[in-house]
Amino acid sequence: MATTIYCEEDMTAILFQEISNQDIDWIIHNASQRRLEEGITLPHSNPLADQLYLLMEGTLGFCPSSIKALSDSTENTDSQCGYIPLFGGELIGHISGLYPFPSGLVKALTPCILLEIARSPLEQKLQEDTTFAAHLYRAIALLLYQRLKQLMAQPEVEHNTTPVHLKDASTVFAELQDGDIDWLIAVGQVQHVEAGTPLVRVGRPMDNLHIVLDGAVALYAYSFKQAPSPFFSIQGEDKGQEFSRLSRGNLVGELLCLDPQPALFDAIALRESQILSIPRWRLMAKLMHDPDFASRLYRVLVMLLSNKQHELIQHHMSPTPGAKPSQLGHQLMNQIALAEARFDWMLTRLQSQLNSRRLLQWS
Image 1 (spheres, rainbow, N blue to C red):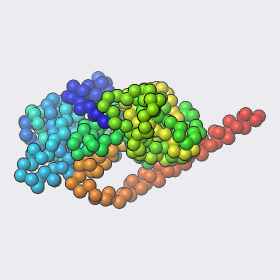
Image 2 (cartoon, one colour; image 1 turned 45 degrees about the vertical axis):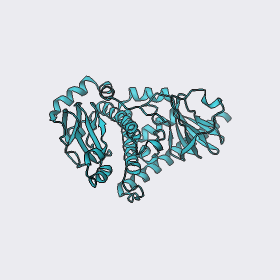
Image 3 (cartoon, one colour; image 1 turned 180 degrees about the horizontal axis):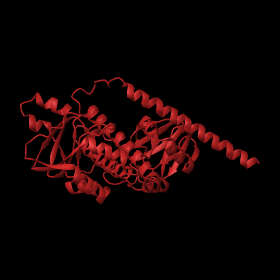
Image 4 (cartoon, one colour; image 1 turned 135 degrees about the vertical axis):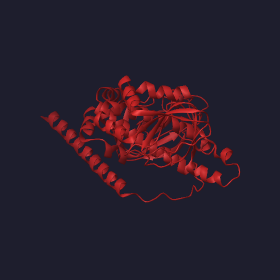
């Protein structure tokens, strides 16, 4: 699958199209300027560092720690590392509660100008100003999405590339509030679909965000040298390669609020399934007019994209790809338990609504 490498102007545009003049004024007031000469390393390796860096001019190079460890054992360390370029508009650092910028070496490939922002006032601003938070989280999510595409273009992973999909229901339902789930129930439509029913078609717009309530859905990827035709599914081509299976609580089309492009995959029910479908236009209107909801949803996407980035680096770029993941931490176990409780509560509410409608029909 062809992958676009975004240039400096693209990444800068992403950031400044998403934040407002008031946001920029706050950043300028709370940031200090820092210059890095070519070849100088940015000291961000500690995930608990107190600074977040915004690249304004120049090009940084990022080498994941797994690749750096491998290249350190060779004589030509710098050439072996294979830096991934970071352009203007990139954010480097860590915000509490979100997955940190991946561990590794960040080096100035050209003279650079950065804004250095202290974490403490930034995190306080994110808590107190949900409009600012919605803008910044959306910008970070878009930057992460483009960085994922850059990582997928690397030689280590290019042969194994599938469309970006975020399979992590526990994060979604643990972060959203009860009122958010009430809204999803109110605007969504419950569908009972048979095995073989397509929810998403490759090459076509994604009109709905789908939540799998019960059943199973498979995702199929295709290799295209150019954008797929919206009529691909009726031209007699074989089914694509399955790359993921979804079950209760998983989402289909979760990136539609970031990427308006046609789908790069098929999503097809494997057996009789129950789906809650939220129209894209309702979701986009809600994100535009409700900054509290927008800040929570975009924060969820940042967390999911960060986890996907970490998974991609560990799986495809690690010198020891067979290494087993560490055991689930106590905080993650609590998050999963909370997500399960919220999801079950949503199912109960949906069932109650369906029963009420049946009573009204018979009254």
